[in-house]
Amino acid sequence: MALFRAAISGRILKSSTVVGARSMSSWWQSVEPAPKDPILGVTEAFLADPSPDKVNVGVGAYRDDNGKPVVLDCVREAERRIAGGFNMEYLPMGGSVNMIEESLKLAYGENSDLIKDKRIGAIQSLSGTGACRIFADFQKRFCPDSQIFIPVPTWSNHHNIWRDANVTQKTYRYYHPESKGLDFTGMMDDIKNAPNGSFFLLHACAHNPTGVDPTEEQWKEISHQLKVKGHFAFFDMAYQGFASGNTVKDAKAIQIFIEDGHQVGCAQSYAKNMGLYGQRIGCLSVVCDDDKQAVAVKSQLQQLARPMYSNPPVHGALIVSTILGDPELKKLWLGEVKGMADRIIGMRTALRENLENLGSSLSWEHITNQIGMFCYSGMTPDQVDRLTKEFHIYMTRNGRISMAGVTTGNVGYLANAIHEVTK
Image (cartoon, rainbow, N blue to C red; front, side, top):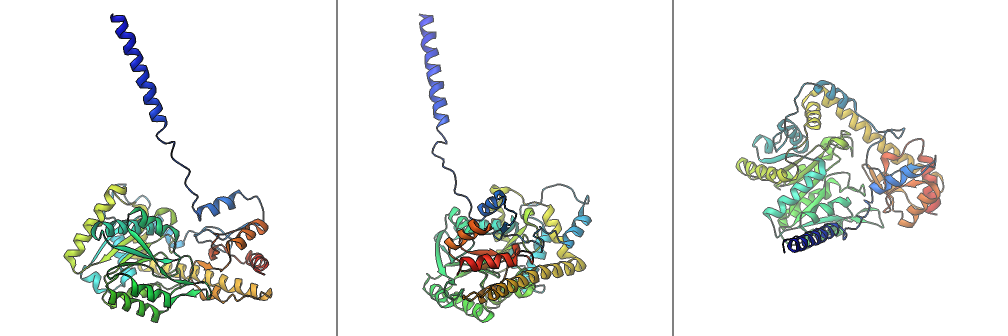
């Protein structure tokens, strides 16, 4: 009898082990491969192409006139100064106090009353992406029934960020395909027709992907209408200084909104304007009623960050605070970021001139009218596919050209290829 019971017990154990193993092996059978990122996939295809003529104008990172990545002199000097001079302890949940203070001066002005009165709740973020994500979660937690209006088009990751934060998304008109400029009338109509108290995502400068920015007068009208409707303006400012070469000019939209009495939010990034792509350094700030509210808001932003990544990185924050906190280093940085912006502007002029000299029947004025890293060329997906197949030129299928990838060495080749596929 004992042997019988042992045999039965063994079968049950073996059977349950098999069932358990089968159950565990099926846990991930429903997982399908994720679609490739439309931007990162371009770089993968470019790297796999053996052609010596290949050109990558899809990457959203600055390159010099030789097509090489750049480390700014101010960054190298800041790294030299901080090397070996700090420990590896955690930063506070909110990040580097010095970096945040300097970031607020950059975004809101050196002599901003908001800073003096301590009316801004702010934390260090994982670049601009992390700032947007923390704010999206903040919006969902404290305005759970609100929705976010996002421009058409926008940086594709904006949709992912607010979707994963479970915030209802709507869109507003921004780009006018026929003029290849701003659809100001459509934008204003959508602002007026949005439910009172909606959130609006705005690009502070160098709109990605179109390179189309409102004029100062248009920003004033946008600010006025958002205030009439009681909307909240959240600025994504990924290119301050990189657009025009002037950090004050590139933050003008935020200044206009502050002067109108808005309590804006802002995501800052140092990826583009300091070349700190891999350091993931940014700042999230929210303008509040008073200093007490700012303390409460900051505490909640920190609480949202805690389960995500606990504490932000220290090295990049030290680089930023060292550069912005030293008058000579800051002056060097301002000169270098202007140099980057000027090179981009020069490449816009060269590309347009090359296309016009080829006798293109199309208007290419929009290349120089737009600003920042990207040019929304107006080419169709089929035309972009031809560029890749016939000329080994890589860009996103919406026709967005990264002007950082255009150099004096390839601008003629690029122009000729564009001319061929747009005849």
